[in-house]
Length: 332
Ligand code: WQD
Image: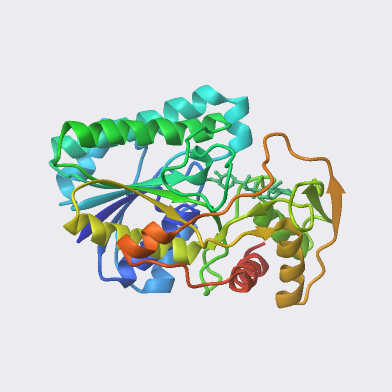
């Protein structure tokens, strides 16, 4: 099948393109390089030795999208393109609402014009509120705590209404927990511009000597060691979940929602200690104040994805810490 991947030069997008190509799909990538670089495209070629088509452009631009659909006979779309920094979304909500929602509306309208109705959306566990119980299931209450999370929630609602209005749409909403790690080649991985907001790229910059210590945001949470617990999932496992979702849409109509997580929680201190152990490096840290908006603990119940998609995360936390370091060591 020919799959259009928006944001295909990004962290999760590039890993998904690799898995799509290695699964025998044809791939068309759209990216504007606002949070990625063209070098990633060369790395994808090096890893897969397969051809793919690339168009540089803005997913908000309907004329650009129509030109791509006119040239390419697209079967399904995986939509990653969007801004994703929680802190930035709080400081600049209009930028996030405009870009993330506008781009999705433009894409869906052009898909409809071209009678393309298979759509996989990159959603996030941050659409859930603070959970009363754990693990988190797809029918838990939805209550984001920041504008980024609300863009994901609003887009999910748009897609639910679209599915309800026309049964031609086949839609999968994939709610990611915390993606970390990198492809085993060390050629592609997570390397955000500027100072990382997320823990793992920050730990990696300390482990490779770019920064002097990790700032652990609080050790007084209601968890085993007092530091925040999250469901970290290897980005390659996450990518493989998208392949399964594409296959699922080929034989299942309507709209489906899946948690993509391991179902296992790990703390910040565990990430630090495991990174030190598997890579034989030192990761100094200091305990700081809590970060506003952070919650004690969350992790997924991935049983619906396991059962319906036939997908289960295979890599463990040591694989994630090892692969993240190999990438960081090769690229920092
Ligand atoms: C993880 C843990 C922090 C940085 C966010 C988004 C979510 C998704 C993943 C896009 C927490 C602690 C962090 C640091 C720290 N992104 N931490 N020092 O906040 O769980 O989720 O990223 O979809 O939508 O909300 O991830 O990596 O920022 O934090 O101690 O320098 O690490 O307190 O406990 P988070 P994170």
